[in-house]
Image 1 (spheres, each protein chain N blue to C red):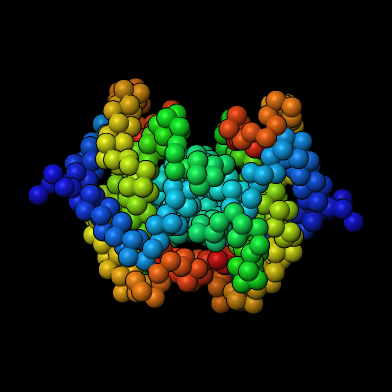
Image 2: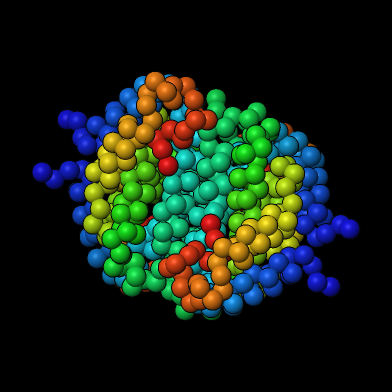
Amino acid sequence: MTTELDRLAVRLREFARARDWEQFHTPKNLAMALAGEVGELVAEFQWLTSDECADLSPEIRARVRSELGDVTAYLVRLADVLGVDLVEAADAKLDENDRRYDAELYRGSARKAPPLGS
Amino acid sequence: MTTELDRLAVRLREFARARDWEQFHTPKNLAMALAGEVGELVAEFQWLTSDECADLSPEIRARVRSELGDVTAYLVRLADVLGVDLVEAADAKLDENDRRYDAELYRGSARKAPPLGS
Amino acid sequence: MTTELDRLAVRLREFARARDWEQFHTPKNLAMALAGEVGELVAEFQWLTSDECADLSPEIRARVRSELGDVTAYLVRLADVLGVDLVEAADAKLDENDRRYDAELYRGSARKAPPLGS
Amino acid sequence: MTTELDRLAVRLREFARARDWEQFHTPKNLAMALAGEVGELVAEFQWLTSDECADLSPEIRARVRSELGDVTAYLVRLADVLGVDLVEAADAKLDENDRRYDAELYRGSARKAPPLGS
């Protein structure tokens, strides 16, 4: 079955091939590009309070959505180049975190453990 | 239709709810967590040459996959909290880039334009 | 006059030379290493409220100081390899921001402009 | 003795005070701002080869210098708010790395250990 991420990966592959940009898309370079885009995403939230983050203005919301699109594109492209299935990788981490962070023990405390683990 | 990312978003939502960690999962905090995980991913590639990146050792490959899982988990959680569809957002950016970076004009040059745009 | 940052740059240069690690210290690799360390720094603050950030526990404070040391080391090393004077570069940006963000006009508002500019 | 970084910290403090921006300059927010600027710095190098990084064009060089200025400004501001001496923190990490990475043992290999440590 072709999933939505497979379809996106193929689109990105063809985008790179049509421009002969595959030569630039090494894992190292794509990881840097991902870091750059995440930096832009973080910058959108840096001066906002928690309350302001919960109720974004339409302008900021549109910019955040656009940055999330960039982050997703580079993440999917990087995973495709490396041959990693992102959803399987995330599920594997969540399986591990289910074991590591007992729901009762860690209830309500981010001090004891980083949510979603690290 | 429920997609694989919807399913992952629900799993993350339940993981947070079971531990009463929703209070920590503000967009601001999740963007920081995403930046932290991307930092760990970048660190895996920092001293490798392009050739070494193309042929990772099994140990590094396993660590990279694990970091990609963390990045995916936080990205999907952040998008869920914000109500943004990541694949739609990525497709919208690619539509824009298809227009912006004419395949003939930009062929083979990352100098003229950042691949996948910014 | 030799400044404290010059002295630190020389120490880092000698550290790299003694281990024959200069080959790894390209601007590209050092920028990645800097991003990795900043990711670790950000991760220290990700689940803390503003109040908690203002009054760090001794353990977190020690880790933050250690991360700040890493960030400073890579930043000074990167600037040394590039031949850039960090303090001059920061002053140049502040000169620009003094002109750009009139103190009266921007008083109390981070919405109108990003503090310290971007 | 007042050092160049002390002088820069005071300049940044006054810049923030004149605009009533101290309220935004929490450690959490400043760490995010630092991450955003480092993202911009990394983006300058992302598509360049090692050779191209070693011989930057005047345009890229000017942009890199400007980003280094931003990174330095936020790093010094963050350290000032936290009351951390950056040079002491960096020296402490280097003392530790001198012990940890024996020069003979680690010569020429970034595989065995991350240069400057982590």
